[in-house]
Every structure is written in structure tokens, then in C-alpha cells.
Image (cartoon, rainbow, N blue to C red; front, side, top):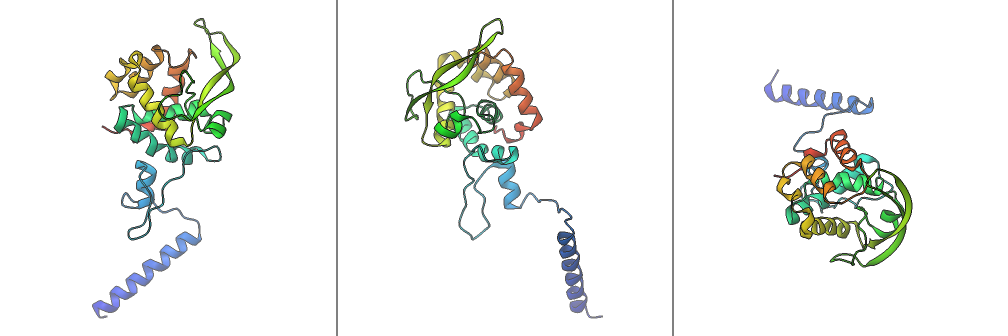
Length: 218
């Protein structure tokens, strides 16, 4: 059989098997060169070569956990580049503080980090009161209301989170561990980011469960 004919038959057989696999619902492994694989693992804009770029949607309360994480990666990585906050820490805080984007604070006011309105800050557009909970040093928690920052977009919330952490002196110790996310969380907690006595355990647990460390930048 001529070489050209053999190659044609081989290609046809391979295509037929691929078609059968897809029709039978057999999953195929994503390759590192696949734009969707790159988007999921690194968070850049997803696009096919030669086609218009399509940006990931911002995190919101209608997403699955995987979708929420993927949508949070670009903002978290920008925060790392601009202000030095570990990417895994930012994503974990967005998950915990917003309840995967489903809290009223995040759905109404695009505040994904529970940023209080002790001044409007650089990126917020105003302030609004929401129900929340606080805990005493002894670990007793109670319901209350507090004033929180309002943002025009999730991107502004992510930027304000990083900027605030980086510019408040009380968090300076945490930034000595910007390449050690777990220690960063512990020092941030000690500095008063949250009154929940289990805050460090909760955040590091989220980081480990969803392997958020894979998105960290050097």
C-alpha cells in the first residue's frame, strides 16, 4: 500500500475513534497548550489563536466553586503583582468572606472581603450597613450590624483589599511572609483582620482543600 494512502487511512481511523469517544461521553485529558486549560490553571483571558479575546466573568453568586475560583484568579494575581498579597490568600478570603459570592454584601455591593467602611478608601463608591457577626477575644460570637464599603465592580473590591492590607502598618509583619501563604494568614489574623478565633484555620483549610496554592505567583 502506498505511504500516502496508509497515512490517509490512519488519519481517518484516528478521527473515527475520537468521534466515538466523544459520542460515548469518554473524557479526554486537557493539554497544557489548550487555552481553556491555561485559563483554568493560570487565570488569563481565554481565547483561541486568531479569535477575539473573551475575558473571564467576574466572580458572582451564580457560579459553581470551580467557576468562582477561576473567575477570582485574575483579580487575585493582579493584587499580588500590585501589592504583594499571596494569590491563594486572596482567593480563600473571597470564598470565605462572601460565601462563594452569595452574601448580600457581595451580590448587592460587590464587596467580597468584608471591608468595613472606616473611611471610603481609594476604590469604594460609598458605604452601606449590613448584618454581620463579631466575636469577643474569648470566642463568644454575636450578631450585629456594621457599615461596609460599596464597590462598582468585583475588580475594585479585589484591588481595594490588596491596597488596604499593603498600606496599613498593622499588617506589615504579614508581608514579611508573602511567599508563605499560611504564615501570611496567621499574621494577618493576629493583626486584627477578623475577630473569628478560627479564622486562620478556616482560611488555610480552604486553601488546602481547593489547592489554591497552585495559583500563587513568585
